[in-house]
Structure formats: C-alpha cells, structure tokens
Image 1: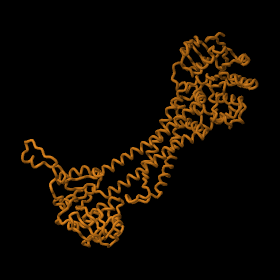
Image 2 (image 1 turned 60 degrees about the horizontal axis):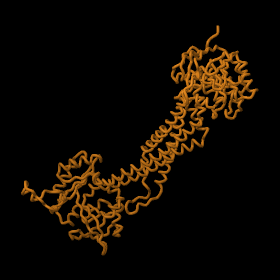
Image 3 (image 1 turned 30 degrees about the vertical axis):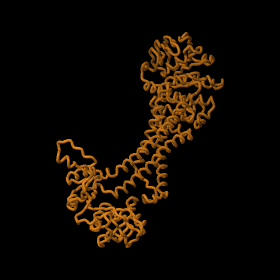
Length: 225
Length: 415
C-alpha cells in the first residue's frame, strides 16, 4: 500500500487581473511517498501556478490541500511559513542563493530558522549535504562567486537541510548545461530511491520528464494525463 | 530574532559604504544637536547665573507710581468725576520699620537672607568729567550672604567697609573709567547737590557690565548721610529664598503681609527668560530638522536595499521565514545604523562642544569671560540617543513592514 504524502481535492483558482481567468480547474491529485513526479505542459497551462499552490506559498485558491496529513487550506501565513520550513524544500530555476552569504551559510539558514538542532550540529549537517552533492570544498566561498552548476547544487543542499518530506522544483535544471542537468537529475533520483523523499518538479525538459516515475501533463488548467 | 540579527549584520557588512553613509547622516544630526544644545544651554546658564547673582529673588520697595484715587473721588464718590493726567504725590520712598521687617523675614524658614538697603543715583567726579552711577548703602555682611560679594572682590576686602566711615567698594569697570586704585579718593555728588569725598577700600567684579560699570557699595549710614536722611531711612529690602522657584508665591504673600510692593526675579528678568525660551525652541527645532533629514536618508537607503533584495526576501519566505522574521531583519539594520550612528554622534558632539569650550572668547565690557560657556549636562546626551534611535526606528519600520509583506510568488514567477 502506497503512502499518500500530498492530496488535493477540487482545487480551483482564478486570476482577476487583468481579466477574470480560470487558471486551475478542479484539480484532484494524489502524490505518494518516495515518488519522483514531473509536471509538464505548455507555457500558461497553469503548471507553475499549481506548483505554487502545492507549495503553500499561494493561498488564494478554493479546495482542499493536504500535505503529510496536515490540512493546509485556510491556514495562517505564519503557520504555513513554519510548515514550509520544516516539511518542504525548494529548488528554483535561477537558484536564488543569498549572494552575501557563503555556500555553507546559505545551506544552514533554513535549519537555523527551524531551530531544531544546535548551530554546531546544523553546520555538521550542512557539510554532510554539501559533501553528498560533491561541493564540500566550496563551502566557505561566497555563493555569488560560484558557477551556475555549483550554485544549483548548493540550492539543492539547502532544500535538503531540514530533511523535508517534499521537495519542489521549478525548472530545477532549466538553467544548466546537459552535464550538470544529468548530475542534478541523478541526485534527485537517489533522493527518492534511497531517502524516500518525494519530488515534484515543473519542467519543460522532455528528457528529464521521461525519466521520472510519473508525468502529469496539464493543459488549460486541467490535468489531462 | 537572533537569526534575523545575524542576517542583518551580513547585509550591513556586505555594503560598508552605504552603511557608513547612512550612519553619518545620523551622526551628523546628533552631533550638531549635542553641540548646539551644549553651547546654547551653557550660554543660558551663564547669563542666568550672572543675572541671578546680581538680582535678589524678591525685592521689596515702595511703589510710588501706583495709581491712587483722586482727591475729587474721595470727596464726591457718587458723582461723575474727571481728573486728567494725575501726578503722583510727593511721597517718601522710605519703607517704615524696614529693619524690623527684615528681622521678621529672616525668621521665616523659607528665607535664606534679607538685607535692608537704600540706593541713590550719583555722579562720580573725575576731574572735569562727571560719570553717572549708583551708590548702594548696604549692610555689607548681609549683602555678602545674599550675593556672595566676597568671591567677586578683586582688591581690598569687605570688612574695611565697616571700619572706615567714608569707605566705598567700587565696581571694576567704574574704577577703570575713573582711573581709581585702592585707597584713592573719589568725589561723589548726589542729584540733591550734596558732595562728599569717599575712600575706595575695595574693588569688585560681578562679571556683568551693567553692574560693574556703574555700581558702588557703601555703608547704610554713609548713603543716608549723603542723601541727608534719618538713620531709619531705607528704600528697599532684598530677599534670597532657599527655593528659587517659590519666589512668585512668596512675593505675593509678602506683599499682602507688609503692604509694600514685592517683585520676584521672574518678573524683574522676564525679558531675559523669554530670550532663553526662544533660544531653546530654536535649538531643538534645528536639531529635530537635522534628525528628520537623517531619518529620510535612512528611509531611502533601506527602501533601496529592500528593492534590491526582493529575490532574497522571496527565497527567505519560501524557505520558511515568516513576515515578522523578514521585517525584523530590516528593522535590525536600521536600528544598528541608528544606535551606532547616534553613539558616534554623541562623541562628535562632545568633542565639538569641548573644543568650543576651549576656544578663547572675549565678552568685552558687557560680560567678563575668557571662553565660551558650554554645558556638559548628561541629559542632552540621553535625549540625543533616544531621539536618534527613535527617528531611525520609525524610518526603518515603514520600509521593513513593506518587506515583510512581499509576496514571494510574484517575485519567483516574475523571472
């Protein structure tokens, strides 16, 4: 029996500016623990919007959202921020590291925010994550001084620092060359296989998508496949 | 909060130039405030002390210019009377039983001292030149208790006024004009035409030109003699109180008890006090303006910082930082700028004030001083610190609140 980690029921969302527009139409979705899921579709089909709803950052929708057994629709922003901190990791297309901080500090920040471990332990864990991603030797560098591929791996390490149940990626390989892209993909794959983490990635890259466990294709705000 | 603070620190250190410029705005504002208020208060205190050292807290005298009912009204109280431009009566300015009144006042626990005295306008003759002046007949020991003349003596001593019959203690400015030295003789003429030769037994300097240039002290008997009056003739009583601020109340009750006009120091020096208030208003308004300008500087810099950090804010929020955490980061930055800037400002202000207090300054004939009087009261430093931190706190809060409200999706999608 597969364990359901994320579940939506009848999620609807509208944009009102500039014109009323029905972006997400009655989305029902179930994601299982340890699954590597890719979300594909043409530009404007609503896949990014769906991802932001799933990520709890976008609260302006109707319907039910349940992650890890927690009902999240209608919860307060502060509660959701704490929830994201603990249970969801993010990897974005443009890596979005804080440029004034070192790679290590960037990885440590969400864990320091969580406050579950002491600073020493957080540092040790951050080193482990960086080591796992093969960029331990760059830990002390300012993140703005790293190459694109290195930055993306630091961002993945940051997403992993709190051992989230769910990792979300918005075009996680969109900005990388094929070698780095393959690299990131194999890291994701091993996370789901070996650590039982769930990954939902929005992507345009068909090759990337075809190698994932399940592909969800969207069109005009509906899941068509 | 701790984490927000360390992020704020990293932000501040990442752009040292911008941080320093923002701090200098506050430093300059607070520094100027401290300097100005120190100098202004120093001047105010100095003049106040001078004035207070030469005016009694309460002065009792007979007010002969007071309006009185015309004789016509006394005779015909119910009629329609018209008396045009009535002159005062030719009354003596004498306070009856002045010595007894002084004794009664001295017994009052609120009164530090009471000194009966009389004074007269006189001409000091210097060869063919006659100089206008005032001669005060006083009990010099009582007067010393009230105005601390002893410490203002430049030559001679107080006691010699009591032993010599025709002694005179002269203001330093007057002595200079008359070219009179200790033990010189000075010829004095009263408006009534009486001429007497007096011995200069001492020279004092109160530090205020309007006193040093015209006033001399003699014994009560000497002045009574040159005015050709009887030994009980006294025209005023000077009173010093233990608590200066009670003067207004006390003057009223004295007036009611003894029936003579009692004037308190605030009424006597109202022009001076108004001047002090206006100077204070100006000081504070200039300082507040400087601080508001510094506040706008911080507001602008923080707004720019937040605008350039939109992506960072979005990612912080995505990874679980709440609106409050983000707000704290930027408030912490403005407070650090405010606190460090203000402390530097206090130091700058102190150094400037100290340098001003060393600079030579000649008060001329009007007041005797060598350097600018500067006040180093710690109250101003506390006000400056509180002001500086409050201004930067408010200037930082508004943009910080905006940063807390940033919607991460808008930023993340926008790329």
